[in-house]
Image 1 (cartoon, rainbow, N blue to C red):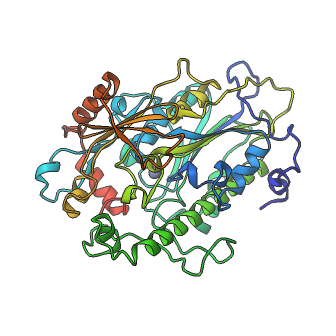
Image 2: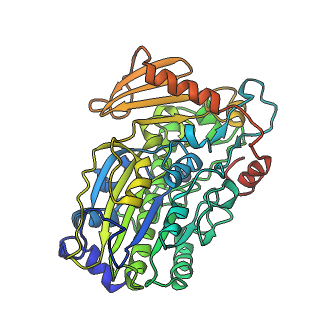
Image 3: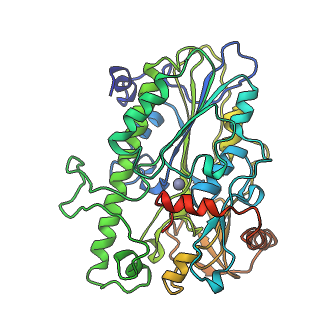
Length: 456
Ligand SMILES: [Zn+2]
């Protein structure tokens, strides 16, 4: 880590002039700020130390917040996996509107064709196109292969560097990727940079012994999703040896936490480099950090992500920060509510303000036909839709509605049966409709996802 960011990130060692929380106005300024979206892929809020988690998983985020960045630890990702959430970040509309998500047709008569996904509709304008219209250069670097051309998520970016598989740009391989990405950019030209850091995405390496909380039992976790007798399938079918299951869960959590720590460390490298290269000198860097979904780590007896509306899968951090820039610039404060849909990222990046009124907090999680079949119907088979009012949450699961009070029951262990509401029924109906196959679904997308290791 460079000297500059060591100073910046050493808690308490920084003046608020160096890191100013707040928001911004793009248009009237003679010098335009660098605008940055960082998606920490697969990072659930409740496993971040900055959100109160016991293990120190996020010192970089802690330093940002200690120096004035604003944070919500109760943001809800617009989608339940990478594609629908990134499509929402890039377009500002929810998955039922942009329709880039899983297709669940054939769940009852699955014959082995795999899950498929619908790429982003080419007619919807993207945030990168908007920034380009405003005179910005636009660039994407993604360690997640889904966030790129195959899913229509590259539109509007002047340049892009997308990993061709998970692991290509993670761990120590992230640093040369960032070097290449930023060394060729001109910090005197306004830049919109979209960044996906995928260290927290499976597979996870063994927790390094250098982590103070690492145990001697820590191992790397790489799920073998197609193996019916492997840990993944056995656990999800509820058939793992009860003597082994608790240790397995501990190992999953520990490997995940170490991966989150690595994502936070790689975030520091990126921000450090941004400062070093002068991107934040003239008008500052306006940075939003969030995640596209969480990860089930034995919660509800489930693993993995993408197909459930439970908090573990959809509750993410949302952080608004500013790095550098002259202190005399006029900032407009953002008041981030604790419960908010992370789809607002799009508007805040573009305008520096929260949309008004705020969008409803809701999510739809579509099932996964192949996994459902592989697991003999034990998991991944249902459509779920959920809505939130603060800590009050309703989940619709194939017609059964459960209410949770998250203030008393954050892990959703004590739900009670409830009646559906018009809003929830409408959302679930949209989910059913939009999960149907249509001619726009591209079979090559499935092949790409398989090649990338995203589908088994
Ligand atoms: Zn993701």
